[in-house]
Length: 426
Image 1 (cartoon, rainbow, N blue to C red):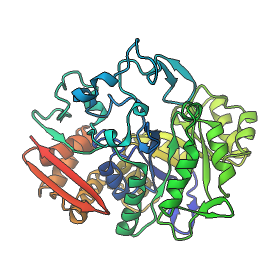
Image 2: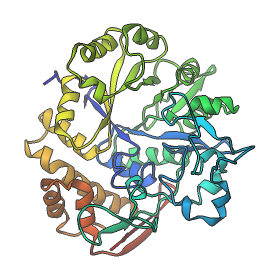
Image 3: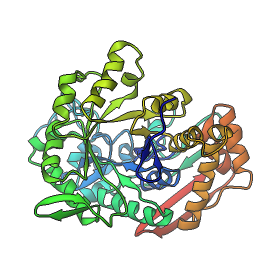
Image 4: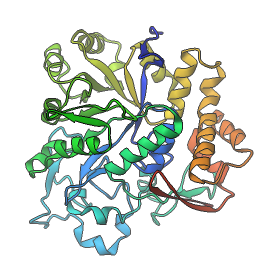
């Protein structure tokens, strides 16, 4: 196992970045609820992928296509906005790929694209867990049956989130939890938006400045001394990162996102080091034990780049690899598992922490969120149900449904200026 390193006075590496909120299989990704629970479970940073609406507002969304994560297919008033081969004018049939790696012909056909909608229209949609929408049997687009429990369904009534709303929530969560929670926004499809005349990076930095995450001195943005969080700016697009690098000082971390098909040579890392502090690589690349895989790690380090990797789930082997490689940060789809595994590895809890930690942390998180947001608290047997689910392989999502499958509750409240509505139903 790799050497335990310390980031700052108290934080052990690797840091945990809540990927799309940190629980996308449990709660709709990029929802306020997902961000809140990801922070509660121990994330150091929350990652909002960003897309731009027709009227220039930044939204927390991974995909440009709305059909995968919202109820837009049920909205008759938006039926005419669906992309078709005959679409013309404001509905081109070619757009940049979601990874930002190039242009894909007919990428948006058969779906609705975020850039065809104003902010007010997007805010009128409802989010859905991605895996629910991809299940053919789920035709209602309202409830999602997960796991093997008959009739166990839930519906988190969450709408798409503006980036500025996410930033305000992060500030409130930092105050509530008594620790700094950072943000790691990613500019998606930056080349596409740039071609449309959208000043994506300027809008992003402006939102961070307005929310108090960055200060502006002599035309240069810096991490605010009194900020409730820290900032990592990331993108797959080099030009996007260079624009933000030129507008910020060295206190704002710049991370180049990369994929398996990118140039991972020493020359490439040397070029990246001229404008970025780190690289975010797929864990599939880093876990390769051949000479090429080892060279990627050593070469990035040799050029002074921090190493980030995506994406961790409930997988002990990959968590161990993250420690072995001494990664600076990891993007996690299961923040509770990651926090528990790293805590156990650093000797902060017993061996049982890895198995029991995620379930217990989730229950603690829901309890604390219930206290702060007036959510219905889990039933008394919730911890036992979650632990049982974890040991049988169903893990947290199934366990959470076990807790609530016999409940029907609806709660609405205002927390940090945001209104939440959670609906649990059988």
